[in-house]
Amino acid sequence: MEDLQALGFTGFRTVGFLRDEAAVSVPAEPGVWLVMRDATGVPHFLARSTAAHWRGRDPSETADALGARWVARASVLYLAAAAGPGVRALLQQRVKRFLRFGMGRNVAHWEGRVVWQLSGATALRLAWKALPATKARAEAERLVGAFTDRYGLRPFANEDEAGDDDQ
Image (tube, rainbow, N blue to C red):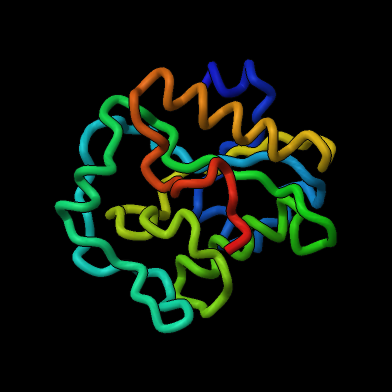
């Protein structure tokens, strides 16, 4: 966590805390955000995701697929930008949508969905760093690139496009 704080990340609130407070502690500004896990060992994967089906797609992955995505020794699971125009693309709204999706609500937040197949997801932590919208996406891409360079894989819950959480 100290490395992330040195990079300017703040918050480090649990999913459970943010869910209970409706993410009011997350700034309503553009920036980058991440999901992390305090433990770095291999987690227990749930057979079914707690996330909502979106446009007829089941967010659940097989245990083998999740295991292949798992990044040993990494605490960061997902990195994303909140950089688009409008209030729905600010950190607070992106985090709210992510949490609602994980609780089974039918909202658009497909990216990062595999987080919701981890046992004990309410203990995961979210952190954020406010940035101008013009810099947020590039910063998310830089962070995903640095992660990939270090571990040889993208973060567990990031899909092909670095930090794109608009789906």
